[in-house]
Image (cartoon, rainbow, N blue to C red; front, side):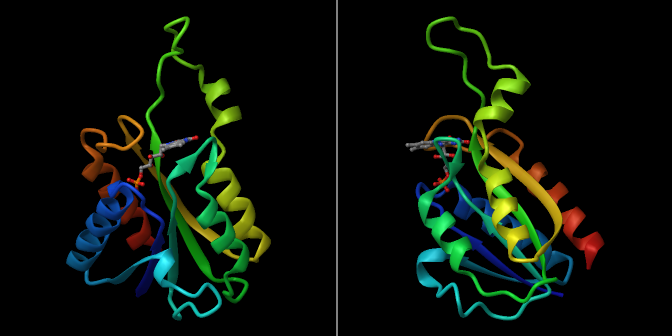
Length: 160
Ligand SMILES: Cc1cc2nc3c(=O)[nH]c(=O)nc-3n(C[C@H](O)[C@H](O)[C@H](O)COP(=O)(O)O)c2cc1C
């Protein structure tokens, strides 16, 4: 099994998640090539058994460069993909001090749904989806984030 992993980390959290994933998959005997999307031509992606896409969130959406990248990618329909994002941990409302409800959060936070829509429109098939929280806008990653990556890696290796 060979995995190509594409991220668009700006502050380094998503890049750390990608490296941790690579490390954990390597132990399982799976090769993972990690790329920042700025170094990749979206129409010339290397062949892979699985493509993993990772994006930081921006105002409820994937960061703009990821949206442009996903619009352009050329991957044969039927190829497998997985998503692993970094997203900000829920914060209390500045005025009321209340935490957003699950419903409010899902309405506003559309990072993964947008990525799924774009990838499914290309005919790709999802095998796993995960997210790791960052405790404030620029990080650091939440406590125990490695465990989340481990769970994600376990789901992926079941697919192989
Ligand atoms: C201007 C701005 C807007 C953001 N908006 C969101 C958002 O809507 N949803 C979210 O989950 N995270 C949001 N974040 C937090 C990012 O998810 C976080 O910065 C990112 O995951 C960190 O990953 P990186 O270090 O790989 O860049 C925002 C961050 C910035 C700077």
